[in-house]
Amino acid sequence: MNAKINNEYADVAQVLSAYYDGLYYGDTAILEEVFHPDAHYATVSGGDLLHLDMKSYFPIVQARQSPESLEEPYGYILESIEFAGPAVASARMRSSMLEKHFIDFLTMINLDGRWRIISKVFHYELQEPTDSNGGK
Image (cartoon, rainbow, N blue to C red; front, side, top):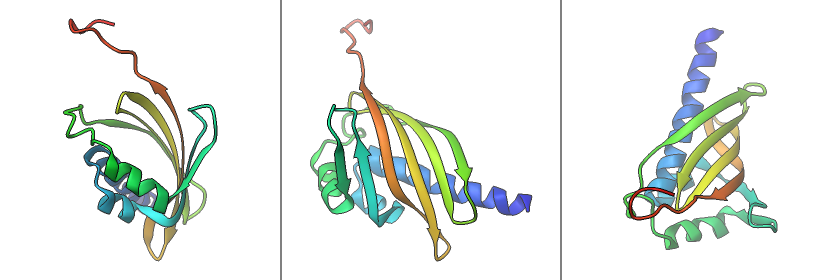
């Protein structure tokens, strides 16, 4: 049983790594692999509900400058992965990019032996600007 749990954890963590890669590199081909086509994207961090489907979300990613092209540091923190049976998991991740600090809550499903993100609900806060001397 432990080996199976470790394998599932590793499989989910691998999808989450690819998810971050897709965001960091602005690569919607990667994002199309990790998101289920019917996935939902939602936040209220801007004050109003922003709710998108993947057909609306991917063009936004394609149109913006990627964190890689802006020479932002690569990195995320995978805070947790929890399983609710063999085909449902949730994850909490933190990252900073595009002048924002993000906390992502990602719900995942396993269909046909493949983990994919079915919902992304997130919060962001704006990063505090730094002066040219590296201070705040």
